[in-house]
Length: 114
Image 1: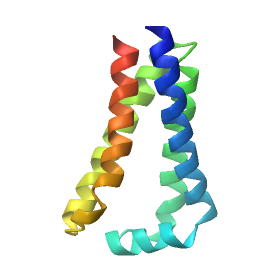
Image 2: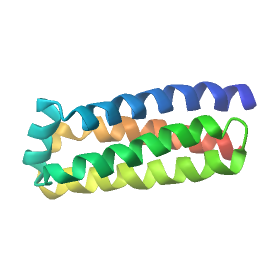
Image 3: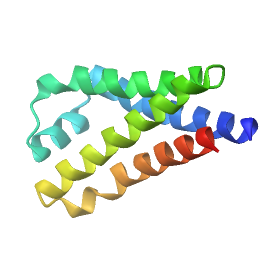
Image 4: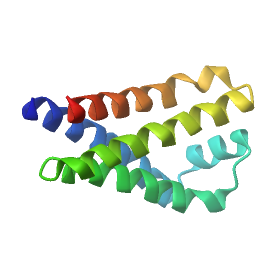
C-alpha cells in the first residue's frame, strides 16, 4: 500500500504546490477568480501557505504517516471550503476545479489510512 500512497501523495503534492505558486505569484487569473468569489487578494498568501503546507505534509507523510494523515485531512477541509465559497456565489461552472483538487486530497487521505 505504501507505493499507492507514495504515487497519489506525489501527484497531489505537485498539484497543490503548483496552485500555491500561482497564489504566491498573484497571477491575474487567480486574482480574477478571487474577485469573482468575493475573497480579498490579501488572502492569497495565507491560502498559498495552506496549499504548500498540505503538499509538503503529504510528501513528509511518506516517511512519517501521521503527518501525511494530518495533511490529507487539512487539504480535504481546505477544498471543502473552496467548494462552499464557489457555491455561495453561484459560480457553478467553476465547481469542477475545487472538486478535482478535493478528489486528489481524498485519494491521498484514503491511501494513507488504508
